[in-house]
Image 1 (cartoon, rainbow, N blue to C red):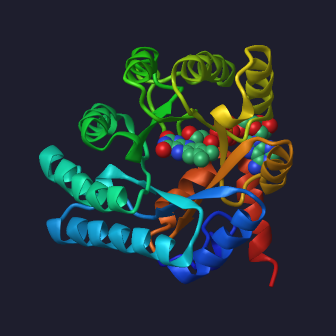
Image 2 (image 1 turned 90 degrees about the horizontal axis):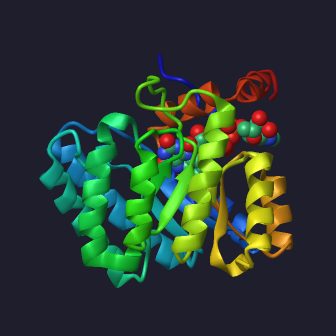
Amino acid sequence: MKLPFTLAKRFVAGEEFSTAEEKVRALNEKGIKVTLDLLGENVRDRKMADETVQNYIGLLNNIEAAGLKSSISIKLTMMGLDIGQEYCRDNVFRLLDVARKHGQFVRIDMEGSDYTQMTIDIFKEAFKKYGRHVGIVIQAYLHRTKEDIRDLAEIGADVRLCKGAYKEPERIALQNMDAIRDAYKEYASVLLEKTTYPRIATHDDELVNWVKQYTDEHKIGKPRFEFQMLYGLRQDTMEQLTQEGYNTRIYVPYGIMWVPYFKRRLMERKENIWFVLSTMFKK
Ligand SMILES: Cc1cc2nc3c(=O)[nH]c(=O)nc-3n(C[C@H](O)[C@H](O)[C@H](O)COP(=O)(O)OP(=O)(O)OC[C@H]3O[C@@H](n4cnc5c(N)ncnc54)[C@H](O)[C@@H]3O)c2cc1C
């Protein structure tokens, strides 16, 4: 059964670029930067993966033509990671060739734990070749992150730190929210101390306040990092942080393949389910 888009419109900026563009412009006018994500994942045939690369190149061109303050986020399973690691890497490089020409930035999102090592490997190769044009995401809930974060900080990687959105077993990931928050704080401090511009991605007040206090106490200036949140969640908080002088960026997903992203948002917080249910009863 095809779900109607109206269910997802709180979390997804539109099915087309033109709809998302208006939302991005409105955020930019409030001083908030954006990372645009053309939704989709787990592409299993080469034709579709090749099309995805072309679509992302089109997105970079559109961002430039529209003059938006937006970078892009990609998922490697959309660029053919399930087909082959080298094939996927070559696709990422094709995209990064264009991104570099545009002076743009491509963030590689982190997916489920089956892909963590391959994602880090491809990122490292890309980082060697494209430097400041590419970044990665690290999930605080994974046990392996203790080592990964130091390793990535050591090479000066541009890291977005998030808690982690995929269901993982206990042997792979922390399950308890307090333990995940403690891990998040530990890793955020490593990034803030050792990298030039970490991205703090969370809607959690406890973590936002902790980062504010930590950076204040350690004399880490507001221009040295940014807060990131997802489209449709806590925009008032983002506006407030922007007014306080923090750098802010909202992750704006759009596109016709919105169902898996939408489901993750619903699984994450029961309040999100209530929100969707309430939109079903509104005109
Ligand atoms: C910019 C961005 C990019 C991301 N990229 C990835 C990625 O590449 N890979 C990945 O696995 N995950 C990614 N995530 C998702 C992330 O891993 C978490 O699943 C998600 O952010 C939920 O964790 P949280 O810390 O934001 O808040 P939660 O753990 O959901 O909530 C913690 C507390 O925060 C407060 N809170 C949360 N949401 C709200 C709200 N809407 N209104 C009011 N209070 C709220 C509440 O007090 C709540 O109890 C990304 C998240 C962001 C923000």
